[in-house]
Structure formats: structure tokens, C-alpha cells
Amino acid sequence: MTRITFACATALLLLTVAMLQPSPVQTAAQSQRPAGTVHNGKAFRFNKVRDGVYHAVGTGALAVVGNSSVIVNDTDVIVVDDHVSPAAAWVLLDEIKSLTDKPVRTVINTHFHFDHAHGNQIFEKNVDIIGHEFTRDMLLKGNPLQMPLYKNYLEGLPRQIDDLRKRVAAEADAGRKANLQMQLEAAENNRASQAELRPTPPNVTLRTQMTLYRGDREIQVRFLGRAHTAGDVVVYLPKEKAVITGDFLTAALSNMSDAFVNEWPTTLDELKKLDFEVVLPGHGEAFTDKAKIDYFQAYLRDVWTQVSRFKQQGVSAEDAAKQADLTKHKDHFPGIQGPGVPLIAVTRIYELLDRGVAR
Ligand SMILES: [Zn+2]
Image 1 (cartoon, rainbow, N blue to C red):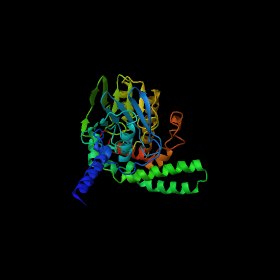
Image 2: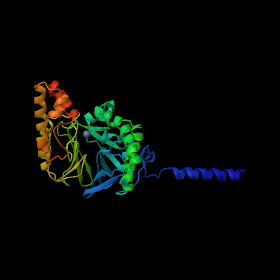
Image 3: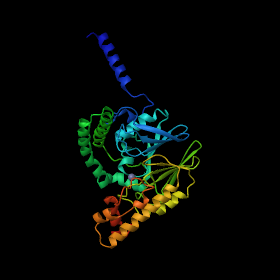
Image 4: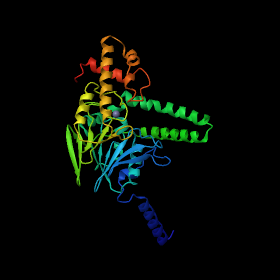
């Protein structure tokens, strides 16, 4: 190779390398594509709730599980919750580009659960990840990985994949087969992404309240009391009269695996004191019917009373889970199909009663 040819080849190589580098506006996090991001079509619907405020709900093309919310400000973007995996968070960032080219500079975790905070690791160090002190504590210790809630989820994935494979093979209808195939690919990608998981705690914490100001928008992050976990925060936009609630208040029933079931209704009373018109929940569609709070409080009080009574009577948690009857709430919560409540809820209530509730 002559010296000139060599120089040209080197220049070409450098140019190629330069072209492969992310453009300056891209963050390094976005360039490091995690495993399991491949999907067909859009992974998210961005439902516009207010100007610059979107509720991001998964389409099913990718496993995302919880919802996130996206707040587009004058010069930056705030994301509330980042889904079930690094892959889901990465795709969220990618699809946010269809809304705005402003950078995501702040993430808020409503709580530490896997389906809301397992995307944290993809963000650059200069991105503020805000959460309650308790949320940081849990993610720092890696506790979420030991929780039955997550372990059951993770252990269920191979079974889900096997089952979907069989159903894809057996399905004759082309439309249904394609749909099952999509579910199978989403589950396989999710498993690949979970393998790369590193629980990443918030790097900014609060105990009761903090407020962010972006242009003329005010964003309040508030801890209203223990409820779904010991560290749920809501994100309240007073001017927009909108509140982002995570699993503290969803469109249906939230799980109670580590909830303070007896304190939850009182904490919901604190939520009622805020002046809002629309709720962006961690699961289900955004809603405006504030009576849902009353229905949920009534359900929680009923579960607590019934299960406490069973415990007093010496009934096992397993039997209490079968016998508790919440069917009178089914008009408001169609998920209730008959007597019985999830064992994970009863186990939690028994645990709270055993330790004298308050701790
Ligand atoms: Zn949760």
C-alpha cells in the first residue's frame, strides 16, 4: 500500500467511525442500545392530556407494563416512571423524539417497583432521577429483585414464552397468529432485557415535597403518606390541574404486596385535597372521574376489615384469600369476577397485623 493510499484509507476509516458516532444532540445513553429493543410499529401511544403533557401507554409491541408520563417544557423534558426494563425505557426515549427534540433531563420515579423504575439505568449520569428516600433505599439495596412481586414476574417469563410458542404453532387464523407472534417476541425481548438489569436508584431524593420550575410550569413532587409502598410520590401540575399517581391510584386495583393497606385510604384523602381534574395513573388510561378515589378507598377499607377479621378468627392466609368477598365492588372494578382476593394481599395484611401495623 502506498503512503497516499494508506492516508486515504485512514481518512476514510476515520470518516466512517465519525459517521457511526452519535450526533452531539444524542446522549450517550441513547446510543448504547440495550438488548431486547426490537419491535414492530410503535411501542407507545402518547395520549395528549394537556399542552405538553402526555400519558404514554404501551401498545403491546414491546413489554413496558406500567405507564409513563412525559412533560415537555420550554427547553427540556421530564419523564415520570420508566417502565419494566432498560429496553422499554430506551424505546420510550426513542419514541419521545416523535414529540420533541428537547432532551430528557429529569426522571421521576413514583415508586421503586420493577414496572416503574427498571429503566433507570439507561439514563446518563447528568440526568436527575428523583424519587422518595425510601425509593432510593430500596433500589440501592437491590431489594426489588428479591421481592415476590418481581421474582414471580421473572420466573413467569419462561413459562409465558413456552405457552405463547405453543399457541403460535397451533393457531390457524392468520390475524390471531400474528398477534400471538407479537406477544411472543415482546416476551422474549423482555427476558433479554431483564438479563441486563441493574437496579439504579434515584440520585435526587425528597422526604415530603419538592417543586421544579420550568418556564412558567410548576411541577410538584409530593409524598402524601404511605400507601401502595412506603415511598409513593405523586407529580402534581397545579396550573394544568393534572396529577400523575403511579400505583397509588390506578384506573383499576393496585397490587398490595408491600402496601400499607390500612393507611392507604387516609393517604388518598390527602390526594383529594389537591385541585386537579385529570389523573394519569401508572396502569390503565387517564381519567377524570374523581369518584374512583372513593370507590378505591371503600374497597381498601373492606379488604382490610374482612382480612383482619379472618386473622382474628385464626383462618389461614390461604383460606382467607379464598373466602374474602369483595364482589360488591365489582361494578367499579370489573376485574373482580368472584369471591377471593390475591394471596399476596392477604399475606401482606397478615404481616402488617403481626407487626402491629405502625412500623
Ligand atoms: Zn407498583
